[in-house]
Image 1: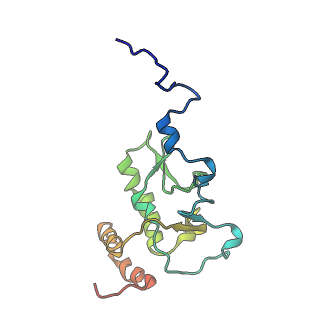
Image 2: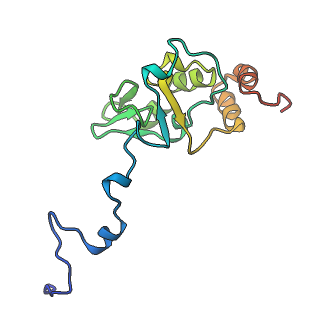
Image 3: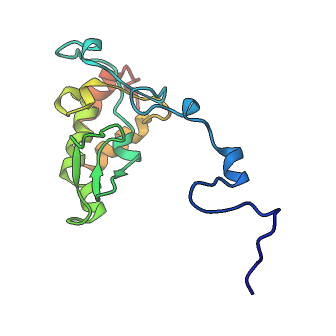
Length: 166
C-alpha cells in the first residue's frame, strides 16, 4: 500500500533538501577548497620551491601505500592531488587492482619516495605533503623487506635521522 503525502512529510526530489541533509550540510565557504586551499594537503607553487630540491628529511607520502584513488573513468591514480592525471598507474578496465597497486610502477614510486627522490615523479616535487597521517619507520622497513630492498633502510634511516639501533 502506498504512503500518502501529508503536509508533515518533506518533499523529496530534484532541487529539494531534506531536513536531515540541510542540518549536516556545510556551506561552500566552510568546505575545503581542494589541494591548493586545503590545510590537509599543501601543493607548492613554482615560486615556493627551488629549481632543484635539496635532500631533506621529508618522509615518503603515505598516500602511496594507504590511499589508492580511482577516477570515474577507471584510472588508478598514485596521488589524491593529481587532478591532471600525470601519475596515473593504469586503468582498471585493462588490469587487476592488485596488479596495478602492487606492481612495478607503484613500487618504483614508493622506492623513489623512500630514497627522497621526489623530484623524479611529476607532482611530488612540488607537494608539501599530506599531514593528517604518517608512515611509521616500522612500516617503511617492513615494506623494504617485502620488496627485497632492505639495502635502502640504512640510507633512509640516516636521511630521516632515525636511531640506527633496530
